[in-house]
Amino acid sequence: MHFEKDCIYHVYNKSYRKVFVLDDYYLYFLKKIKYYIYPCCDILAWCLMPNHFHFLIRANSHSIEYVKESHRPNTQELAKNLGNLLSCYTQFFNRRNDAKGPLWLYHTNAKMLNGHSDNYPLICFQYIHQNPLRAGLVPKIEDWKFSSFNEFVGTRDSDLINKHLAFDVIGIREETFLLECRKHLDEDRMKQIW
Image (tube, rainbow, N blue to C red; front, top):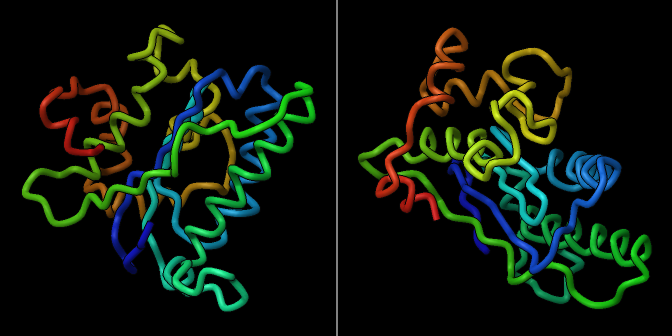
């Protein structure tokens, strides 16, 4: 995984099983996001699903710093911290469930969304917030507790996302947020965020 400063990335990973089994599992993961990910990038949107997660982030100067004390000299700070997040959560999950071994299917993916004629950051932003609705977990987007959607509409306080930067980067206004998040997503255009 390689990050470039000021570029937008769709970061995601999936498990072979349900990894967020109770609310406190989600809350623990969010706490670790705050500790590992928040300090080294700008989080524009996020969603935790029962067996996977999505982040829309912008890499900053801290994201791209190379870790000096690493046994892998080409490891950037954000990549290291994503690994630490998943490792920490896996240990938590395994302790709570008397389990062993890996929890995630593969290495975390980070797809750069810059440089396309279509507005892929907007498509990804919409997809991340619509994910629980599309999966049939809730009847309305705002009913899902574990995404940044309610932070954007102001029904939940959090300093995890950079709301103003997200609006600027995504190219929408706060007044049009709800409309943009509820737009139908074209399946062909959506494939480009993967």
